Every structure is written in C-alpha cells, then in structure tokens.
Length: 139
Image 1 (cartoon, rainbow, N blue to C red):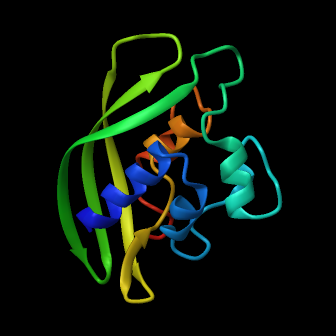
Image 2 (tube, helix red, strand yellow):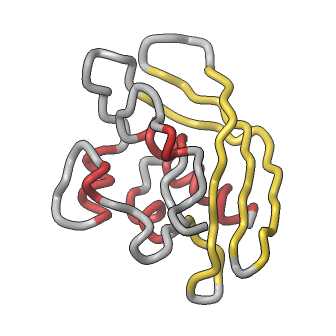
C-alpha cells in the first residue's frame, strides 16, 4: 500500500503522467476531471499536471510526502492517510496538508481507487473538491 502511494506522489511530483496513470485501477480516473483532455490518460494528464487553476489561484509545482498511515480495510480495499507538503508558484514556503488515498487490489497489486486531494492540486484545482477525501462510490 505505502509503496503505491509513494510511487503516486513521486509520479505527480516528477510530472510523470505515464507513471501516474499506471497506478490507477481501471475506470478509477474520469478524464473529464482534467482541465486538458487529450483522448487518453497519459496525454491528458501530461497536459494537465501543473496547470494554473481557473480564477487566478497559484499553480501547484510539487508535492513531498512527509508521513503515511496505512489501513487495510479488508476485501481488497485500503485507505492511506498521508501528510504532504505542497509547493505553489506564488510562495516560497510550503503548505502542509493531509490527504486520504483509497486503494483497491487490481491485477494482483494495490492501485488507486480514485483521485485524491493531491491529484486535484496537481492538475489545477485551487481547492480539492470533497470527492478528493471521501471513499469511492459503493464503499
């Protein structure tokens, strides 16, 4: 679980769209959430990571993982609470935030069951929507 979350944060931080896309379970990422839609996950995410939010909020630049707290929920589901620091285009200091990352077993490995708040930050949301913190539908 923690290796998947660390790889997810690292992929976003490195603007590695292919790496980030590979960590989502099939159907877990709605490309309609992205500000730039280019037909597939890799192209859309590559164009969206680091996008400035609509309305003039500062653009996300990078995220650093500080702490992870994994919890196996059983039935091939897990939740990882993560403390992260975000760097934005308009400030020299970091913002410390808590994120909740939901995972499911898919293809014999842990994958993201949905985008988390860090994902929304990375693709140009000024504030992550509530959906970034809540469990996936049907959980």
